[in-house]
Length: 297
View 1 (cartoon, one colour):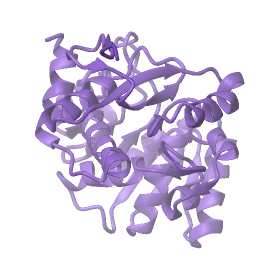
View 2: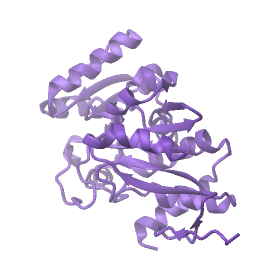
View 3: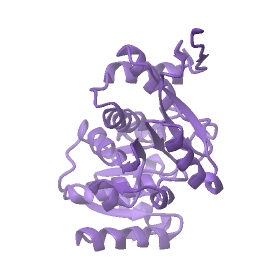
View 4: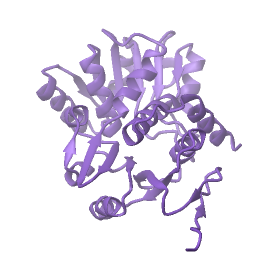
């Protein structure tokens, strides 16, 4: 019998993929910005696991076929990113309680004939914030109304925060606020970006879930500038590439508390790792891989 041959991953690690390798990955479009492959492959290598994580660019028109194909190919699981976090619900069999409540999924697990959906963005968002502030009873402004905004808004509303959702299209903010009201019986304020100045003035936490400032558009004008911020305001930008966005630069200038999207990326990825493998993720290894990737190491 001839020895099995494989293919090296072009992601900075020397993993050799063979027929025995357990595959995981990420689906979304585009995926050129994703650092998840570096993070997960470093974790697999550190634990001596014959697993690999690869990006699968999937356009919206091919989402159903992609999900079915991944299961047919015995892929263990994938992360789900923009623009599929809500639409993928149509093509999976079971959804855990948190993801069902939120109405968005960012992690799939393929097991036997079942496709299980999870949302690890919610716990990742909360853990990142609780490193720097108390969430309970806080006043939170969320910019954007997509999948990540849903995860943060539901999680923070459950924890007793007073949430206001502002979106370029106010109707989407209203729809999300009404979803939270219907599911949790918790009132959430909403509106358009013209309300940013008044809302930020009395806020404890500002969360930007929009792609403004994401690589390669690092010189975008942030939705909130320093003159609207106040000292002590926690400014959390979910964009992680670059690690210091235009919004976070404004936060530093205002004496606010900047929080990088790398924290949420790390913690949501760690929870996905647990879901797929049942093992405890090496957080220090995963964080170093993210930082190295951003620094071009």
